[in-house]
Amino acid sequence: MPDPDRSEVPPDRPLYNRTNAFFKSRGLQEMVAGLDRGHRENLLARLDDISAAYADLSAIYQRDKGNKGIPLA
Image (cartoon, rainbow, N blue to C red):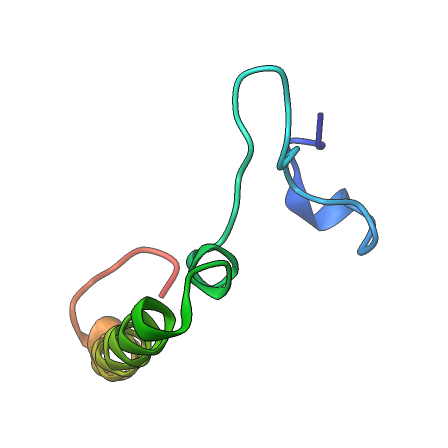
């Protein structure tokens, strides 16, 4: 179990267990990589679109958060 204070977690120690008795965590790209070519190409393109949209939204948020009274901004 990781330390509650993330600043104290060594860089080589994960912040959570990706696999335990109840589940196995996997990233979307890892899951898509295991698909057949036709499905993989379509989903990789969709993931790229989603990632680009997220990056755009994040940039807007980062730019404007200081003006909105957001704590710790």
